[in-house]
Length: 153
Image 1 (cartoon, rainbow, N blue to C red):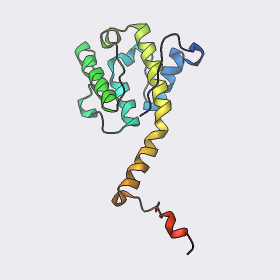
Image 2 (image 1 turned 30 degrees about the vertical axis):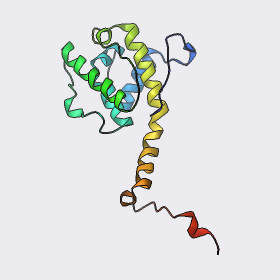
Image 3 (image 1 turned 60 degrees about the vertical axis):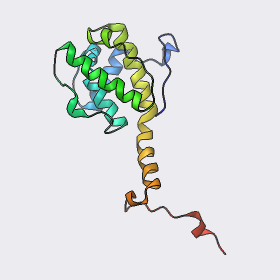
Image 4 (image 1 turned 45 degrees about the vertical axis):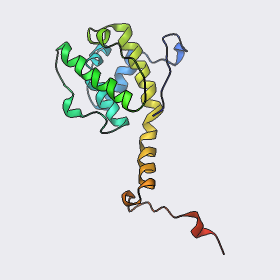
């Protein structure tokens, strides 16, 4: 997975607004959140991360619809561990996000959107590469033929 290095002051013209991020999340997950701070529960980030790397986060452990800060913390810890599993050392400001810190939620949402955009296309590439390395998993619609077969003798 390719990381995104983002700070608050790095090229602000490329950062999405709160409304743009909300629209993206609603479209990507087919939900209807109205405020960016709703993402502080961590549940939506877990679902979005699952689109990037299915199975890294056990979605049965994600607590949806809760209003308890302890559940928000649990969800964000699941996300933090998933990021570490794929080699990303992103420090999530969990305490500030779960209490609705506007700046922290916006910063993290902008970073996550960039991470998502950079890696969503790699999810398909990774599955193809896994199929190539394990011939028993190749699909019937795609056959990989060694280049030696095309060489004329």
